[in-house]
Length: 512
Image (cartoon, rainbow, N blue to C red; front, side, top):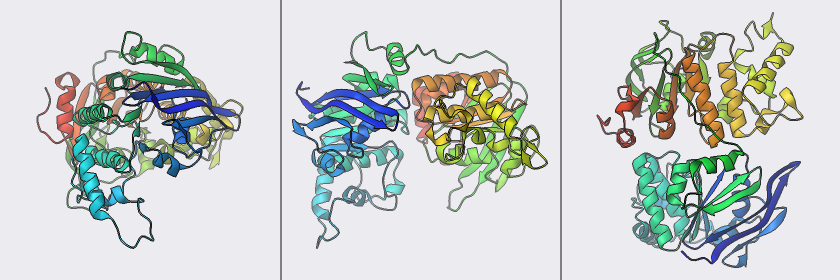
């Protein structure tokens, strides 16, 4: 690794109205170095990366690549300078081949012919060089999640990237796929590539990075080597959130009566293979059952089924011994609490005020409605209590009238969680789908504690998660979903991380 910087950011400052998203940030990246970028939600990471990639223009500061100034606000200039980005949510066309995706946008529409042969050769060269083996003619929609990530990386490499920005690169990977990615990163840095690694997972940050930069409230608060006693997880967590972060603690309880029962639950869908195939599952009062799996294997359908948004084609679903119609209102009236996967599109209506979102699912209940009229005072009082109890921040100045889309991701999730857990009657079942997706370590610990406390108070909790650290932190029993099939829910102690990874990839009997 060379000490000469290939990338230098000097005094980067960016404001949005009264919010200072970046405040005089200076960073350097050496050739063959992995720089981890840490920070809680709203710390300024996304803004900084967007400035680097030309999507935003900084109010002050400069960026140089290999000693040359990078023109601000020009993504093409960033690409030409050798900066590539692999987003957390892949930007691939599933109906096109790998080669078509790699070439997409790289040729002029007015070009008289396509240079497909040359592009194919370059793709194969880069794939062989870094061990990113894919079939150029394969349809992207038929690839696994790990293979799609390889295509995203190859897109950047084929276009000449020497500096790669990886945003939460392991968020949707199995442990085996993550290990393969880390091996690829090692090959890249050995051959002189430089990497900015954005992640909330401190274990993998310490594993793959040479240096760690921590942002808090728009400022750089730490820039230190990853190796050595100083770079421990507790210190990094405290640097990120400005306070010590205690892990969630569990209260030992005995599970009670079965609250949720699935027997032979099948959802056909439009394809040849069912979306859900003959699922059997019991969730008892006072326990947390976690469903692990790679994204797209039926978890979203299961969550919709348990919230009344999806009907069964075969099999049965009973909540507290009662069969409910596939109608969300019936599930809400039965007290089922939900934390949806997509907090922006499903969890809240961003343009509504916070108090309106706080009562969104129960605005017709007697608590908030009389003769068809909304009891605004009661709704606002409920929202104020929710803000205080669940520490929802970002409401300064606006209070309960704050437009919900102005909240950070973590605070929006606290609002949704508070709405789910603050009903007058304890919810018999809580369905939490990806409850900490994209949240920082402080927000994760808070959400985990709330779910564990709910189980301790007698609720049955079903957690659907792709984060295996989360699965082991929360679950009493764990089941794995693959291609619409669900394994037996075994005690967490019977599983290993490697065993779950194998089960996520389709192996049977993978528990330890």
